[in-house]
Length: 114
Image: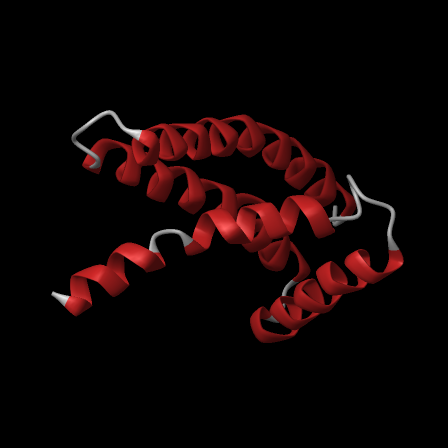
């Protein structure tokens, strides 16, 4: 039973990463401290993958898509309409609204590599 509870809690991580991405990315916020967090993670992913375009795809496309999928799963799994289901629906709508924005930013950023 505890494993199921931990698995359920891990489904919230992609949405938290999406919010972090939205708050720290230099496209939306011009704060040096927050932007340094984004650049640190981007640089780390770039070093691990040995590819700038792959790091861009992982951060700006995979995180929003996984967030959308996990939030949609959580919203569908909730059988009753209560406060928790409304929160999951709002999380799904936020993920669905932010995903195309990050997709366009990803395409622009990938264009810089060409």
